[in-house]
Picture (cartoon, rainbow, N blue to C red):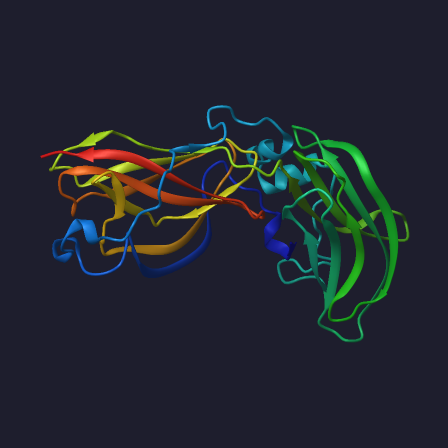
Length: 311
C-alpha cells in the first residue's frame, strides 16, 4: 500500500481511530423494534456455529511486528537510524517541494514496495541522489540486516514519479524500515522520509469475552472485551449483532440499534472494551457476534460471546 505523509505514525498501544464519521447505522438485524418483532421462530437465521476465540489468543506472538506498537513515530524513526525530516525537499509543515509515497503498513512476503515522488510544479527538477534503504529491524526497532541499499539519481519530477521499486524478502514475522534520503553534494542527507512495513504471519489470534456470563433484567449494558494476541493488527467497528437461541437455533434479534461509523485498529497484545446494550432484551440465551479483519490482509474472523438474561 502506498501511503502519503501520515502513515508513518505507529499504532499506539491501544485501539486507534481509522475514520471519524458520525453516521448512524442500523445494527443487530433489520425490521421493526424488538417489541413488534412477532414470532421469534421467524427471525432471520444467525451466524451458525461460532467460537469466542480463534487461534491461540492466550499466547501472544513475539516478533518485531508486535513490538512496533511500543514505540511512538518519532522514536522508531531515530531508533531505525534515520534523521528527522527537515522540510527542505519533502513537503512538511508548509515547507518543501515534493509530495511522496512510501510503501507502508501490512504486507505479505514477496509483495512489491516502492518509493514515489510528485511535484506540483511541472518544471521542477530535483537533480539529487536519493538513497533508498530497506532495513530489517530488531525487537527494539534498531537496524538489523540491511536488505537493500541503493542510490538513484533523480532529475525532473513529474506529477507522479516512481523512483524505485523492489520486492520484499520471502520471510514472515519481520518488520522493515523503508527509507528515502535526499543526499547533498557533501554526501549527507538533506531530507529524509521513512515508513514501516510489517510482514506478519498471516493469521488471527484473538478472543472476545463479556464481563459476565449472566445478566439480570435490571442490567442495561454489558462490557465486551476484544483481545488481540497478534501478530496481525486487527480492524473492526463499534457495531455488533445480538442473536438469541430459539429451539436450539441461533436467530438474529431484530433490534434497531444505531452505531457510529468508526473504524478501530487493535495492535497485537492490546485489548479494547465495547459496551453492549441489553435494555431491549427479554429473558433467554443470547450471544454477541462481531467480525474482525487482519489489517492489510485478506483475513477475517467472526467471533461470538454467549450470555444469558434472567428475570
